[in-house]
Length: 451
Image 1 (cartoon, rainbow, N blue to C red):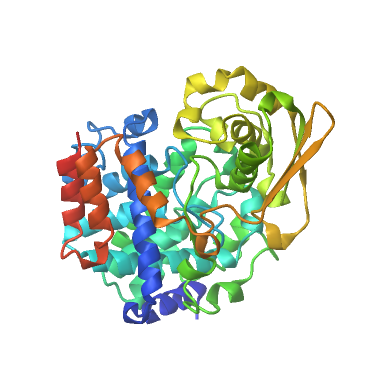
Image 2: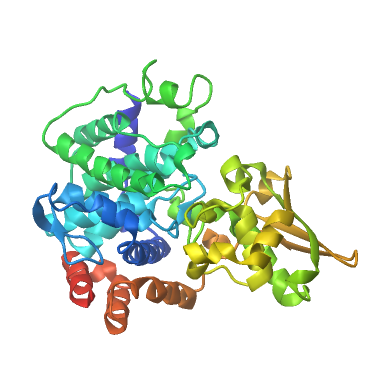
């Protein structure tokens, strides 16, 4: 049996009735977080650039945070791009990327267009996360380290599967959707720190939905599109750099949404640096007398967190989101890393610039501590301060973001487009998403609350 078919067989075998209620809770929270991030990203220049009404046809699907409604594919593209525009959306350790911003934009558009319920959408999302992350387990970390952007190149498979589940496609059609996706996957990390990166999310959200719609229409893909000598695995990873057995093993035992789980961001920047930010903020609040006393800074993290794009000093508001020196400097100077710190004017803070220039980085080799960090500060008087964090707050079930912080983050994001009362109403709907008779009730509430 081909790999696409083996994957489709496992997708078809998943029974939402057997899902742990905790998985539904995590799904609600992840979807709410992604909707908030999309509302925050809706008025950005990046979203303005991709929202081209003269090229798109009107349709039933809401562009979140706008009054515009588009067809399914266009809405998926725009909302996916907006959701990733500020790099504030959730991440997955298995995927080494951002699952929800790929899966939900297509699902939400599809649910609106076809009258699906909130439970239909939630169940399909959980299965989409399972598919994307099980696929990723067979190719990471080689895939990530090679330079592919897994959010796009692997997330597309989750988007396609989730849409196929919502449409109730059969096993053959799901296999075709997976094979079609193999020809639509793209995204390289060289474009991190530019406006192209959020478009990776929008394109993958659109293409995953498109693959499922084509499979529904009877379009087929090669049954060996993944494992063929010129198929996805050989082309993207190379011989010897993937393991198909890992893709097929232990589906839903437990669901990836529960272990290792989804990580919800506390700070509006790349997740790789969150452990170092937590350590810097703790030091600033507890031991550091004043940032002016800082003479040297050393940050130690796992080598997978210290890739070249993270080591760079910030030179623009956008690439500041990928700069460990900038994020740690902000933590040491301000004791916080906030949305306002990634606006153009914030980059010219002289003390932040000074501290950023003092920061050095070195890797450690503890694989059990792949998202933790140690910050070591030498003061002008020669004394040394140390602060370690085993895992950043929000790191999945290990250190979950408290519910009140999730709600506060949503309100902070949603105020970019929604009235305060409307944002509260939308969040309340999201917290009972699986009970909504129509997923479109959610988008109707968002539209009504949009200023």
